Image 1 (cartoon, rainbow, N blue to C red):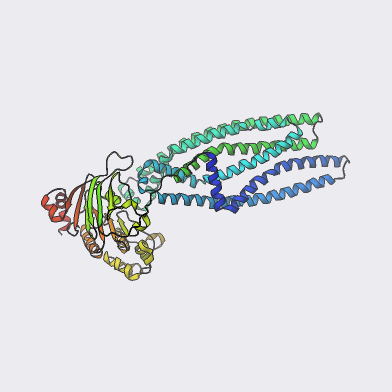
Image 2 (cartoon, helix red, strand yellow):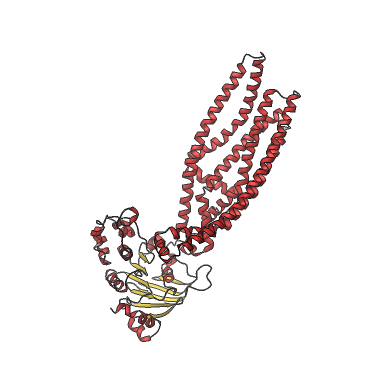
Length: 592
């Protein structure tokens, strides 16, 4: 939705709801429009009832008109009651639940299509926070509801004011002007609410982060043992109070303005009572008109108040809806059109440079690298040297600022994501522990082979986890305490992640610090087995440890975002450079 004007946003909301919840949306609209005709009908019927009763008491009528108007009132009341029940049910279950679910799914689908690099941008994360707030607070459903209230109130006001005008034109301006301050107040307060919430996006993200820290299972133990849980909770409490204080100040202004507006409405209602009494005393209106006018005037005020509050509150919700649709309009990851047919020759990186959003320096600078098909390469370097960033550039996950990454001479960005990534397996240091079955934990990387017991067992054996099958109750035994399954150690979970990567039928596999939580000797053992299993694959192993250096075909040493050295273990040791320094500093880990 490139046009972010209010009519376009409202049209987008109505279009989405009527497309995915047509029955509920239609019933809600029917209730809002037809149901609001009741006050005008009630006003006319009340006049008939009052005047009919007076005539019956004076013997001027047999009571026929009284019975007629009473029957009309009961029928109208019944129809309105049914409409209200059906309309409210449709609004709550259809528009708010199903409709909001739709907008939430659209948001998550958008996130899945966005470039990974976008999530390194703090500004975009703030936009995402506001878009999620729009979904979590049912803002789109609220806009839909407010527009229906707006339209329904307009129908009610026009009908009742037309009836009042037929009694006396004096009643019209008093009834309308007495509620105008509500519109002005709601409009100003709504904009101020949005400005405050907009500015709080970063703070609310930090609040959520801190909350997850002292409620997360991974961090709770360290915080308690190290004794800084009080610091985190205190920081959260101070930030929470700061956010609440800002919101409270706006709410206080809102309450004061609403009290002022209500006072004006009371004055307006008092004036209308005096006017209609004078008209009745002068014989300009009947007793029935007197009673109905007082009731009708109260309804005009109530409907006008609701009308103006909805209209005044609309800009606030539209601002959040604009954030939501604006997020949906952000550029998506470009998908190439070339089909990737597999690596035949090799991968070449040529003068590749990259820096993160809002970063001053380059994470990777002028890197050139050749990887032959079937070659096993170790990319070594200290933390922050650019190793992981380089792996993402090689896979086309991040767009390089300059240079190119070529697969058999073709730019990696030109391949369709589906055809390319089905040939790639990535094992990350930040692996996921799935609280699912052992089978699923391995075969989820290639669900087409979920029933291949022998291949799953082979992947487990390859990382030294063959024993785990008996301990957890077979391949279908559940892992993790979340659902009463068997809990594994940190090292076992990490080995399982490696088995998952090995199981995937891919020709290129990238291991990003896959054994960082393991003992160096166990690391060497696992990587040795991995290289045996992956003998037909092209493998890039990212690590800050040198234990695997003698096992690979080539070593690439990164330092400060650049390639410092390239060669075999023997070559690099003879050069006595960065690699030799790293190796000698860690040699004792692997000499036991």
